[in-house]
Image (tube, rainbow, N blue to C red; front, side):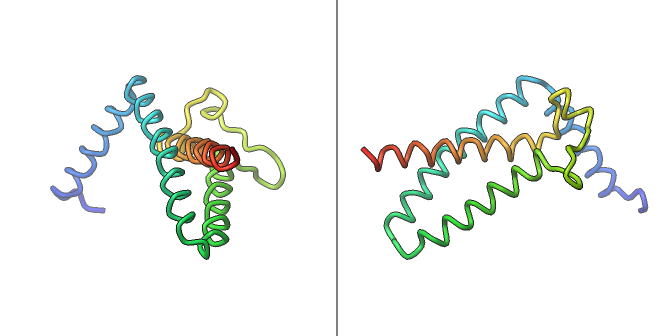
Length: 120
């Protein structure tokens, strides 16, 4: 690819964003925000699907597919064996995978809380 001004600008912006994310406090704050957003998303999904009962099965299947896909992406296996990745062992996954996993955890927690509220 040619080194155009647009290409240089995009590369420089990407590098600056990655350096900004490498700060542990910013990384932690992004993970906490995604956890809380997952909790909010669970509340919104439970509220909207509760109003229209014909969407319950579709919402359950789609949520199960999304949650399992994120789990497969985060903790995936290759041919029945665990992937050996030194970054995963040290706890430093790529930020977008960590954000998706945090969003998934908040979503599952929020759905459990909604289920307990409906059960009482």
